[in-house]
Length: 217
Ligand code: HEC
Image (tube, rainbow, N blue to C red):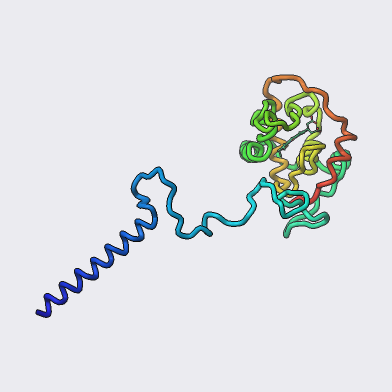
């Protein structure tokens, strides 16, 4: 008698567990099965949040940018300001501290492909999607002009930007910027695919390059 009760109890408990699991599975729109219907959302707030994503327009700020510019004069923790406003100052003070050995070039390639190739292409010479979508075509990095730049000048362009090209001092550590300089030199050894169009003068470049300069690590 006692055993029978225990058996019923176990069966009932197992039954409840099965029902609960089934209901949960159903609530999850039988996810293990294929369905072309949109899933039933039990908790909306997890997937749909009021937020702006990177590169999105924001109606919250007057300038409609969701990604905020740095507050002028601020530096990240453990960061420092990129001190030069003209490439001549950079040239007077800086020399390339890293040799273009294999590991430096590998690092330079990695950083170049991540940070520079969206506009300059992986070869530094080709047309990229952002240019097809309307960005001013950047100068050929293997062109005569960029080739004539000193290492410090290229470092300055990466750090402070040049005209519409933004500076990357707040995103790339100095070692990485120098690694990129070495990698750009490597790209410049490739055959020239096309000659430069007119390149803005250095003076014009410098007035624009300083506005957003902020930090370096
Ligand atoms: C948002 C697109 C963009 C990104 C990203 C970008 N650049 Fe540029 N770059 C440009 C444009 C546009 C110019 C031309 C600016 C001008 O009109 O002076 C330029 C100019 C340059 C120049 C000067 C060439 C010359 O002949 O005057 C160098 C060197 C350069 N970029 C290197 C880099 C490196 C290295 C990176 C990565 C750290 C990088 N750029 C990232 C758009 C970009």
